[in-house]
Image 1 (tube, rainbow, N blue to C red):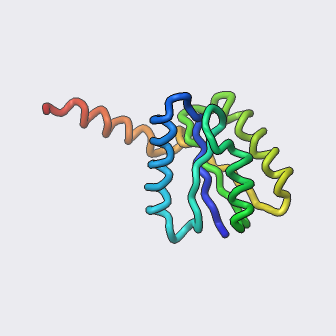
Image 2 (image 1 turned 120 degrees about the horizontal axis):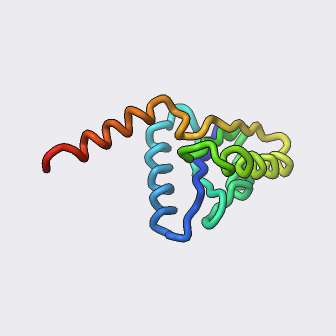
Length: 125
């Protein structure tokens, strides 16, 4: 079973975590032919945490998990913290293939999204 795990930072503000959950639901609806299951996880401050989410996917029968860090820059979380959490999950689930994609902010589409948001905000209402 191929799974996608969207990883965000996590927030003390529950509305922010719910926003990530809604984003994940939308991603799931757009990727039904690519992934059997799409879930989200958090680095800290919210649940499920990364190792727990990966363990839950393994219990459900996942054979591979593609992790997408939903972060804008390659700070310490992307460079060190997420890989450490993935390594913990991998050690607990050695037969599971876990691959980490590049982080969201590295996408070539991000600059165009910024221009689109700016253009929309600049339009008279």
